[in-house]
Length: 108
Image (cartoon, rainbow, N blue to C red; front, side, top):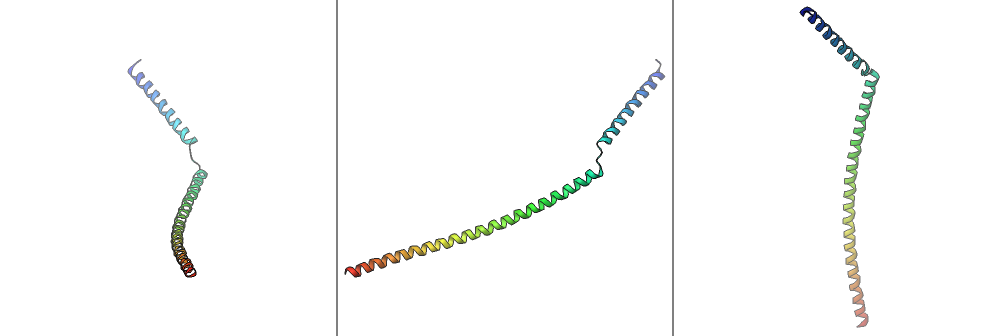
């Protein structure tokens, strides 16, 4: 085998390898190509996800506001209950004093 035959054989082998690589690349891109319908569907899903996230954020904000309102209302109710219990305690004490006074007056 002469030097020229070796160079030609090597060139042919390299060319065949290049052609096989190019063909394999073409096949991969041919079968993995994304259609416009798939892209449109992905964009639609992306938009729906964005809207769902906005709705979730609004719901979280509403729940936080509602929780703050209910916490405030509970604190007010507890304060009113405490005041009512204090008033009831005073009224019972006063009633007890009146009973004792009436018993002393009736006994004496």
